[in-house]
Image 1 (cartoon, helix red, strand yellow):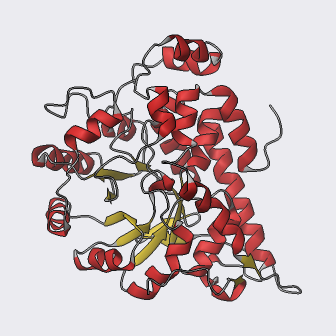
Image 2 (cartoon, rainbow, N blue to C red; image 1 turned 45 degrees about the vertical axis):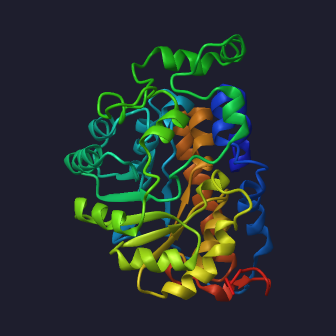
Length: 387
């Protein structure tokens, strides 16, 4: 095993070990992938101010996200079909997050069910919920999350319809994978992945199969989206979800300040500035460019988090310095999971943490909660103020 010093090292191993169908699912965006690329490259436009002759001893990245203590202000974002990247992948990722002391968010479109993850962890995790037409299914999903001791619900509001992801269509993405000559030939080159899949019974959407009614093809993400997702979603509907869930509520998928204010009005405890990793509206702002205007709009009235594009601890530091109270990694931990299982997720978190800790020190701070915009050099035209 090569020495792993950064997230790119994990991505390279991941690409070799996981079938192309699932690698492409994670490592792609919609249409031209303009926003997918901008999510990462726009971080590079923000520079850090280095300070010297400052006390770097006794540093801490410990913080809080929605009132929960975390080892660093980083959570594992909800990623659909994580259990197809590595057998029982959601369980492995949740365990790694628990041991490291950061939040794990389970996707509705997970392979392992809510109950599977709860049975294999000892601390509460968070549950991500899509906006579906079936009220009965939605209420039962929230109830199942409560029964599993989930400590927060994350409602994703930017996926009423599925953005066109060319690679997924061409690969015939499904869970379990459809056996075509092309997919079989590729899977035969991924022996480590295949042995893991043979050793588990969890190969379907665990939160859907046996729970949702009237869905003709629960193995297909596109079919499930077309049949089950609520095209008529509005803020009144989100208020109903607020009544279904009496714990901390986070709304994910905010990219416009006006929507941030609506989230505040419906009683959300936090919002996640996110464009779904560049997988929905191509040509939209990157999350980090959208962040300043949203912070200006809501002030300190609601906790603001950010995901999409984070590949390093320096990215985390920049988002926190700009004003976010939490960040999330998705692809970065999926690379680790596909490369090395639970140990790979742990390694991804270790890499992010070390980069965050050392970069914070170079910028003259010992405590992540004291970091502010003073450490940043931001181009004047960086943020779209929506004027």
